[in-house]
Structure formats: structure tokens, C-alpha cells
Length: 374
Image 1 (cartoon, rainbow, N blue to C red):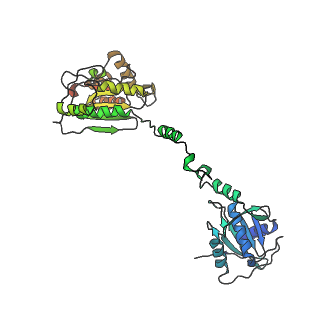
Image 2 (cartoon, rainbow, N blue to C red):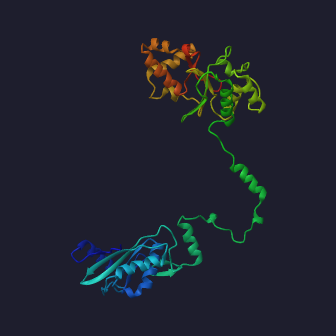
Image 3 (cartoon, rainbow, N blue to C red):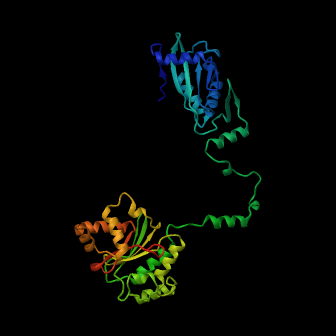
């Protein structure tokens, strides 16, 4: 329900504000109206203020600020608010204050700047210039419409243009370029890893082929260890193919998901290098073969940042010289528990500094290869 604010002379702060308005001159944000009989001009001024920076209309005073007062009936204020709302588009909702000033009733309307412009009054737009308001031209309406942020110029129709004006070849060139997508990881390399995991997995194992997605890497897990005679090191060079599941592998070969036997891991390496990414890391972990793809090349921050504890840095130097380290060897070297050694080494694996190799019960840790180097 409409409920205007009413004050009287005892509300000194509000009264002082209104008296200050009356002492001021009409401007782009202030308008005086003598009576409610000027309702049309009041509404047009409200629309002009909404199209500008907002403003205040004081009703019951002359244009020089002399108080005349207005008579207010039971429904006067509600009818005033409704008239403004109904005749503006988008609707303007004035804040109405009734005050007793110098023993006479004065109405003030506060109009806020509209977030959607232009505001029209019975189909016409108005703007405030100095002490008066003017009708907006069609070009001014258009400019105000675009500047309000509802739509940009280039989203509007092109006058006189037809479909024949569109250059089909240029449109095709644009669509070819616009449809280019750069994946975080080479799509073909990920597909190769999933195909390998599906073809070579141990189906006697109840586990599933998994794709694990992290902020900095993607891991493809294939249940089962490598076939006899194939080592992790072999995956980084040309090697014989020994598919565990011949018929499944043959089916993938026939649909060209496998291009040449024994080249899948090398193809993944080449694709990652071409994309400017580190080589994929191959390892045997928890009874599975894991291919890990990383987003960025390793930098010294992995082992020289303040977050690294001293023994991890020393472990990295140890592996640089000795080639590998086991969990047991780490625990003995630093005189820590197996649990602590496992936690430290896992953290280095998670950061991409080490990768796990070897059989599950005799696994060890090596430096991760980057661009063919340790």
C-alpha cells in the first residue's frame, strides 16, 4: 500500500533540508511547481529527471521558492504516485515526502536516475537542460538507449541491408576461425591414452579404466601392470607391442583408433611436445599403469619454493646423482618413519618432480622427464 512520509516543523533536520531547497534556484536537478494542477508538467519533469541524474520536485512553491502550500485530500498523494507510474515507461516510482513549512503543506518528490533509459512519458522522452525540460529527438533517444547499456550499437538492425549483402566466403572464413578450440591437453593424446588403457588393461582385475582430472594434470589409469618383458622405460622409446587383449586391440585397429602397434606412448609424447606441454609421465602405481598429462613444464619453483622442506630438496639432489630412491631408502637416509617418507615422496609426485616406477612391492621414485631430460 502506498504510504508517503509525513513530517512537520518539529522534524528539524528534514525541515532544514526543505528550506535549503527553497532557498536554491531551479536547476537540472531541482524544479518548483505551484500546485498539483500542473500534473502534466510534474510527470514530464519526473521523466526528464529519470533520464538524467535524478532530481527533486517541490510542489506548493513558486518558481522563486516562495511557499504557497497545497491542499491534500484523502487520496491525493496515492493518485499523484499512480499518475507518475502509469504514464512513464519504464515506470518511475517517486519518493514522496509531505512537510509543514511556514505553516503550509509542501510536497517533495524525489526522482532517482533510471537504470534503464530512455524513460518515456506517454511515448515521448524528455531531458533536463538548465531550469527547463525539452523533448528528446529520435537520435537523442537512440543515443540514450545505447548508452544505458541495454544494447550496443552493433546489435541493432542495419537499415536497408539484405541477405544479399552478406559475403558468404568471408562468413565461412570467420566461422572457420571462430570454431577453433585450444584444449588444455592435446585431445588426440588423451584419446590415445584411453584407447591404450582399454586395450591393454587386465580385465581379470575388477577395477575400471579411470580418467582423473586435477587442477594441474589429468591421469588415465588402466587396471593391471605392464605385460612381461615391457618396462616403464620402454614406453619412452620404440618398443614391441604385446597387447593383453588381442581381439579388443584388433577391433580398435580396424576402426583406426590404433594406427600402428607399439607407437601409442611415443605418439602421446610427440603430441604433448607439439602443444608445448611436458611429456606424459608413465608409471605403475597401486596395481595399475598410469599416464599423467601436465599443464606446464617443471620449473625450479617445485623444489626451491618456501613450501618445500629441507629433506625434500636434499632428496631431489640425491636422485639427480643416484638416479632413484625408494620409500625405505628415503626413510633410512633421513632417519624418518616409513609413513613420513611416503608422505614426502607423494607430495613430490603430486608436484610433478618425481614419478613412481617399478613393480608395486619394489617401486622406486625417479625424476620426472621434461623435454627428454631429467
